Image 1 (cartoon, rainbow, N blue to C red):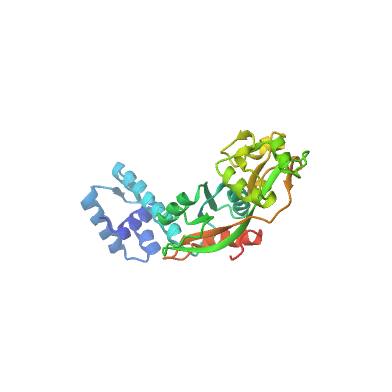
Image 2: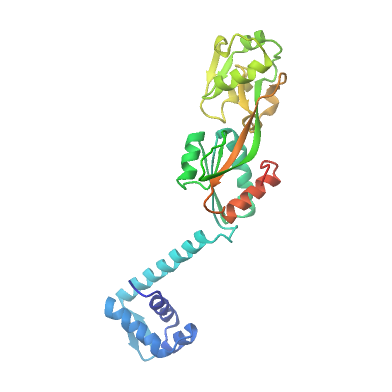
Length: 293
């Protein structure tokens, strides 16, 4: 393996074009610069042609100079990734459920606008995938709806997310028969969420499966589209409802005891959060999302 000091000497010599200036620039003797070049050329062959007032790189010298610059850039990238002190550059990685993700992603982009050196990497996923991604170090931060008991993870309360019964704005919902007339817009968690919430709104109801199905979508950002068009009602977490652009076209039906889920922030317990992750959590707290940042 080539000595890193030899690489720095060669790069500086190529830039300075003179042994004396190179020695002064690096704080070395001219003899040390010459010795470094002898070591390199003994392994790589001729790298420079020495002329009285000029040094000229050979083809091998040009190739080696490109290699030296690649090594220098790789070293800078490594130092950046290892640096916990740099909160303004690098990646913030987060994996979360889709509902809260609709709100989180745009708020993190707001942070990136202020700190353009940051890169936001965010994925929507269910709880089991979130746990696996954080434990395998593919994402630094994760959000789950069930608090894990794995000793490798730290879990802290992030936010509370109530379920909401959402109907078209022009429709009135007072009785179970109103839901029967509307019909249900389903989604992957729709029936489970509706069962939990509707038992509070309409005690003794005959069950969500007795209602006519008016539509289904597995895209969290599109579930409220048929509701806004008057095709039916649905049950969603509040963050998903708040992310819908046309709030004037939908109605949150009040009534009954609330059903509130907790969201838990998780990350690895064996090492501290990066400064970038800490900056992101501070930003989210300022935006009113993170309770314990």
